[in-house]
Image (cartoon, rainbow, N blue to C red; front, top):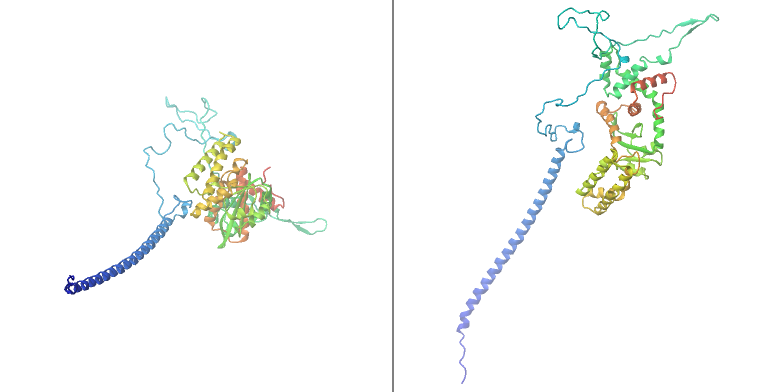
Length: 490
């Protein structure tokens, strides 16, 4: 029996379904493609927005950095207060809570009183007697030799200036006729009387401008109003130049002695001469100071003053000129070392606690040396650990701790060496103040006079010498063609 034949009707009925499914698939494909295109466009927009966000964040960071630099002042950086200006954030003048205590000495304060001058220093004694008796009102004698005194008198001293008036000396050079030949010979002006101002007045002018750092026009007015001495601005400059020539020998002697010193502290700062850029160098020995104004900041200045090879210990900051010049024993300034992490700060604090104990006499040098060895090792390891840091400042400091650690710890074993270069920086301060007043020099001769006269002033201060007396004696010796007294320590 043959099977029944399948009908073709269902096949004809399913053909429209396949077409519908095909159309639906095509529609779905188009929708998928549209969604894919939308995803691509959204991804591109997202990347664009991310780039804009990154650019905006970078711009914000730059603006914040610029704003922080604008707001820096002397309270947040090492800048001097005179550089604060009006653009940056002003200093907070009263950050602490106001105290409830009264102004002045507190209860129990011993106080400080002016001591009486010794009797040999007193120029005049005036006896004061009471007019009448406090008990009965009877008149008392007013002459000391007639009165009967009780006990020692109460001493009260008043310091006063005598009447100030210029002492003018006139030299009259006469011509004397020789009794033998009958010819006249006129006397020459004495050497100490050369010029129009005496040694004491010349020294006073230099003292007011160098030690007191008074502008020359102010000195000119002071002499005219207080002393009755009329002097021009050019005359003050001539006094400067004469004093500079008078102390040229002692200053040269100090410069030549520098290369033989066991320890030298050196530093430098900017200077101006007639608008041109110069550099003021200071070299501090144990008992004297040497200043010089140079056209360069390079190691050539060190070679000229300290020789090709300095045998002593050079204390300085980490300026490249010192590193290039001095390959021997040196001490770097800890005050110029930027601490870059909590570990470095902690070791820095431990080291300076040790140094203060040694300076105060609580430990000796052997204990200082022994107790500083672990600190030195930890700082060396800290530098080695951060040599590859991504931060440039951290890398620089790490390189210093790794490569130059002996130059940071020389002070623990060497007498006369300190951990900081504060001595040289303190000696620069008077000339920085003078630079702000005078705006530098006008000539090379002025540079030489500035370096010489400040060398003499600061060296006399270290020797506890009277600067005014030394300058006066030096000018007198110079006029008499004699050698002035040396400033080298005996």
